[in-house]
Length: 175
Image (tube, rainbow, N blue to C red; front, side, top):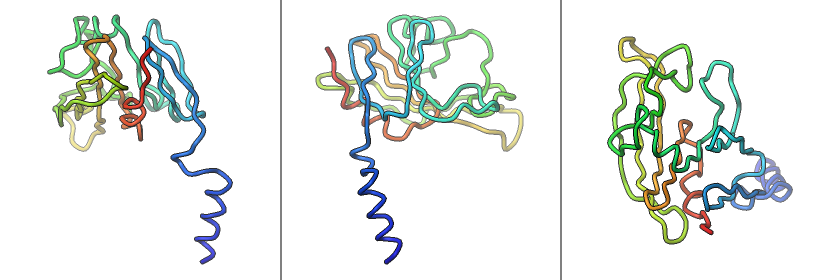
């Protein structure tokens, strides 16, 4: 009883997650609403949305990348995005995202589907399981999720399984 009263009071004071405060992030002709505590940071012509901690052990902060035509043009080893390959813009070996002391290894496609990316737009959604080092046992791995809107030359890359990101992108507003 005390727990349910405390939980009810907490939700009354902070609001449920469905009513959490948001702010707009605009990129390449679309706007998404993200939680107010997330922040956007320019990375060249791309935009990285920081969603959590920046651990010194990780290769990047908890975040996702919003990329436009340049990110699509150089998304696969310096060549154009290939839906049958994970997003990997450099031609060299990349660090494992959660544990940067290892190199990324093999990637296995988990699933591919169509996803809503705002009214009137569809994205090709692909999820990859990336092993951090195929030569060692019990080494970290991570999931790479990619939304690609071919008609708009927009790509979203998430290495952290950001909770709710698919729903946020589904509600994107295109200008």
